[in-house]
Image (cartoon, rainbow, N blue to C red; front, side):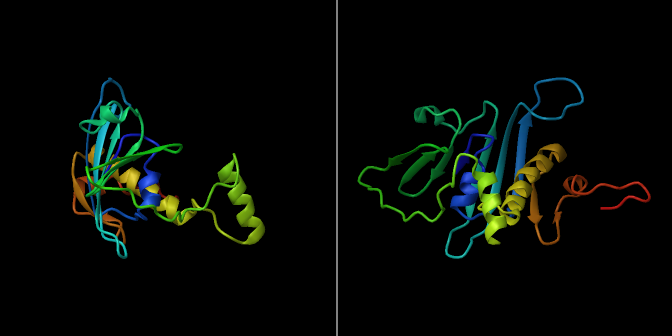
Length: 191
């Protein structure tokens, strides 16, 4: 699977019910001088374990002008490309296109993600959750897992190391990467 839109990583997280990755490897190109370490181009390889009855997932995220090989045929500058054994699905928040192998047909899938409750979805969901003692679709557990995966890509890039990730222990198998996971606080200040 390839994600070549900086804000689309939640589509595969949602659709494939991803949690913490088991491995992360990043590379990038910095195209400027100065203190800012953010790369102009970046590619992060994530591996996620099997979940329930779902197979393991390999997700590649692209940033900047880097895109998957052959992405120009999809005529989308920013989207998520799901690759399966019978074809590919390219999607963003408003459209999706199927590219099936010859002889294959699409099988409808029952939607399981609830529809948005309005233009200001997150605010409306939050207010509804407060009023009904419910939850939102982008709750803290979901958002935490997604944010952790994104930040682990930055850890791999900044450390220059690919690593295995142990989410329960909050630790990698790389001392260089682990150095980015915690900070030393001044005396009298802890978190």
